[in-house]
Structure formats: structure tokens, C-alpha cells
Length: 367
Image (cartoon, rainbow, N blue to C red; front, side, top):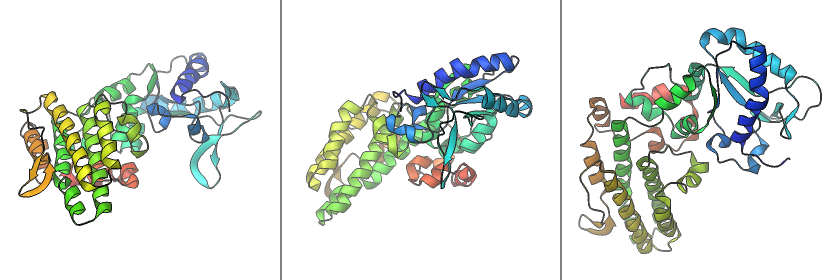
């Protein structure tokens, strides 16, 4: 393998040096956007040399209008099959499926014949329909239930990837529209995160009290993840899926304060120590909440859970205070008795998050 180049950087150069000049010569009147905003570690900027074993390499998506798609897609694809060099920056430009793994692509080193490139031509609307299961069009505003069914991993790729050319302008419009949740949806998600903490925070001690150290550890890990998720929400950043969740969290502004405490909670040998570290983490996240100024300041100190000795932050108080600030009646209605939050908060299922065709059924949870 040649020297590693971050995939987004490689694709940006691939477009500028090989793809764009051909488009200008062969399709001078074509209006298009060029970008990398779909799945892939390189889209998020988390790729490493190991990422090169599949689905990685010089590639770009071209987004054209619906009117131009039929006439342009096949012609563009054929021109590049014939015109592309076999390598770029030392990497093959041709790809093949891995045997017995349909749809999983790897490099196909070639020295003759057409290039099986990864220059995709589509429309923004078709891409979003396949990626999010949403009928996007310029100016259409997603409703609150729509926002709650979009996985944050996919929203992150849409907004964190690269735009190499914006002759059509639809990809920048898409990214602007999905830059972050509407205010009241954001408040609801924060409230749902605090609700999850309020529901389970006393159980770390209760399970430990009866000698269930394994159960206490599991609950602590769940609460650590929920606190991290609140960190993403408070800093208005979409959280990636599990593989890159910790990597992305380490880049948040709150990480230097929180990460040592969260690691200590997970490393604790008994529930008393575990609870002490979680209490410290609750205090940090409560301070972060208060700094946002979304509600009146709330206590950042833990106290007993009713008459029991377990130390909790009372997450439900934060949830209630946040929901009291929600003005959008649609958000208030969907939250009534359903503080489940978004798909990333109530489900760990990869299949459920990835299946764009299921989004309509998931949306019904909020109706």
C-alpha cells in the first residue's frame, strides 16, 4: 500500500485533478454538486490505514437535477470507465466486490480494460430517500417526528463530509437544513436523555447492595453512555455510531473534564466507588446544563434517592425543566407520555437504525 492519505483528502484531490477536468471538457453545460456525504469512516474523518481494506479509496458522488439525471448518468459513467487512469496517488481507481460479501467493495488493481470506478451520479432527492428514508426537496422542512427517526450517525455524515463543488447548490442547502435540530426538538432530546438517567441512576447502588456487581457494572456503563450522549447534545454535535462514539466524544470540549471521571466509574471495583465517580460526573454534566441557560439553574449536587441511601442527581428534574421551555405544540404532544427520545436513544439495534425503509413505521411511535 502507498502512504496513507485521509480518505476525504484523497477523494477531494481525485475530484479536482481527475474528475472535474473531464466533466468540464465533456459535459461543459452540466450543473452539479460534487461531495462525499454518505457512509464511511473517511467521511467522518476517523479513517486509519486499516480502513483501506474495503469501501475506501478515490471516489466521489455527483448530484445533478432530476431532469439531467436520465441523460447524464450513463454517459458520465461510461466516459470515466474509459478515461480514468488505473491508479491515483498510488491507489487503484477500480473496485470489485469481495467474494461471498455482496455489496462490499475492495480495490481491483487493473492494467487494462474499463475502470469500475466509484463515481456515482444521482440526485440529492434520490440519495436522501435511500439514505434517510425521507422525501427531501429544497424548502421542505422536516417535522418533529421526522427528526427523531433520523439516526445521528447519518446526520453527522451529511454535515461532516466534504463538498468539492456546488454548481447546483442542493448539497449545501441540504447540509444547512440538517445542520442541527430545531430548538424545541433539541430540548426534547435533552429532556429524554435526562429522563434515561433519572430512570436508572439509583440502580447502580441497589444492585450492588444485593451483591450483583455485574449488574451494577452494566448499569454504570449504560449511564456513562447516556452522559456522553448528553455531552454531544449539549455541544450541538451529532453522535456517531458505536465504533466512533468514544473517538468523537474525546474531541468534545467537555471531554477533558468528563473522560477521567467516566473511566474511573467504569474501572471501579465496588459499587460505592462506582457511585462516587458517577456522582462527580452528574455534577459536571449538571454544570454544563446550567451553563447553557436553557432553564433556571438546577442543583448540581447529588442527594439521596427518596428514603434510600443511593446518591442521584434526580435526572427527572432536568427533564421537566427542559420540557417546560418547549413552545412547539407538536413537540409537546409527541412527548406526552413518550419520553423515549430519538431512535439513537431508545434503540441499539444496528438493523433498525440502518433500515431507511422502516422509518415510516418508527415514525408512527410519535403519532
